[in-house]
Image (cartoon, rainbow, N blue to C red; front, side, top):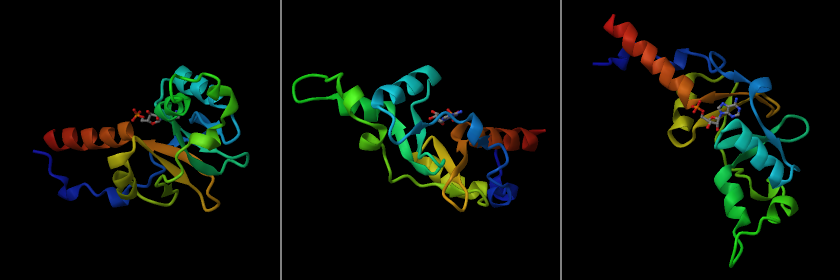
Length: 147
Ligand code: AMP
């Protein structure tokens, strides 16, 4: 059985195994929804961070946010993809972690979100930490204990 008593997430920095910002697909506030849908479709991700022109974290946008924005009263309105921007439909109430935080802080965010955005003191996104990386940490611990 996995014994987590000696596995202290509070001692592991979030920067370990974080995906650096330059490798993170993102969209910008003023991008039309068409561009965001293209990014989400081409990358295969369900959601990506939204940044402003200075790289400051503003929220996240998902495929379902975009599809929902296209629903009119009677039909799907494809023209919304061109008239609305990311800023109009993104989610802004998103928990984040600080670059000096530990994986313990990330764990709480990953209960409800598939990735946690990592910010510096100026709210700029320096990377993301994904559920996949967290599960890899747990898997490594599990097999270390069994060996
Ligand atoms: P994973 O745990 O690897 O399945 O990733 C969870 C989520 O994190 C994905 O569905 C994306 O929303 C986001 N994600 C992972 N890698 C990237 C990346 N390189 N760029 C943007 N978003 C990412």
